[in-house]
Length: 107
Image (cartoon, rainbow, N blue to C red; front, side, top):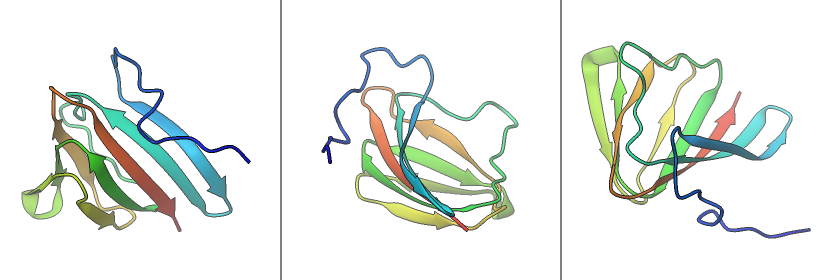
């Protein structure tokens, strides 16, 4: 068994978000996502078949939800559970620091 660190191995340049599967079994997948000034493309909405529980471990970000056009601003330690097929997008992430997310996808 090896240990690792959620804050290590982050490249100096991040032309796109870094998404890494840390563990997966059955109907559960855990990912680390690292953003630096990234956002969803204009007009793009995530519409996932899985539920997603996500926590922002480091940084700042905004998630927009299509239903009700709600913007949820997240800081370190904030988390949200996103139901399957709840259309959402990453509106913004901090450009001056990494935003490190831990996402758990499940059915």
